[in-house]
Image 1 (cartoon, helix red, strand yellow):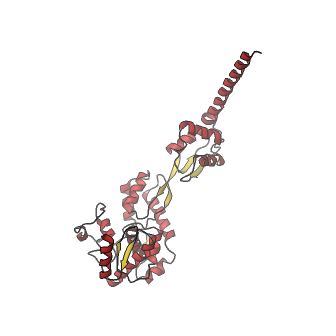
Image 2: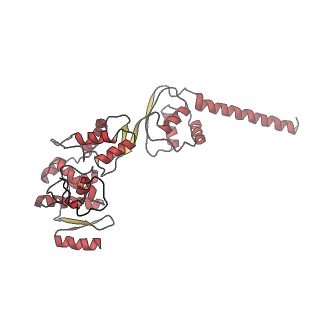
Image 3: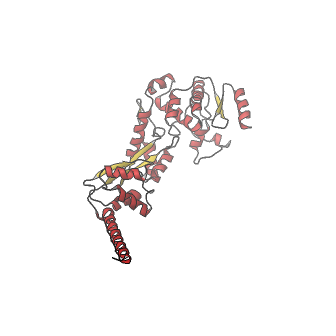
Length: 331
């Protein structure tokens, strides 16, 4: 056989091989419905790589071949578009169907949602709506109307008791179901000695949670949280107004980066410049560090603090010391 004939034969074999390979690939990703053999549900963790997802799908029997699945994703440029969450796949679907479901959320039954520390109930409702978990208005209404039994006392709302964390939340859940997830986590995270510590601090557990909410909105460093909690309890004990700016910010219709003198005179039970004692409810949903600080405040006689920058506050026992700190910190 001549060289030309051999080349032609080799080229023809390559073409045939390519056609066969393409056919096998097409069958594997678009026609093969042998997987999964039964409905299967799995959770894709936040931050998982596509290769990790492919292996998880194969181990769960959702797909039979990770190589073709990876190639398909790269051809579609969708290997970075998979959404984390919980998925339910019916039996006998193609790899193409699986990939489309992971990218569009078509088979998703639950989604990951992170609730930051210090969010209010209104902010949480908005975050849940943005994640496709219902109407923010309906969620907020439920949060503000429901009551939670904490150490034998009924709270006035769920404000302060919706624990900030990362949750896998079921799509289509009713507001009360989502509230139960958040409050259930709060009850798990509440310090075990909460009841005895609250009694020692001469407050109820819900009132201590209110203190934690003030600490959450005021503190900028972990070290300052127990100190700020101590100032609050010392002022409560002496009958001094708390004068916490964050309580007024909570009462205002919109957040302001700086309060005016008019704001300090606002007619609201949350105005801690005018009213002595704690506000009627928490003003935010505190995280674990602020809860720990509220139930275990520092041992100090400080009555004042001012923010000095770099995440730290300056504390003082007397008004004269405080005024000196204000001059030093705000100059």
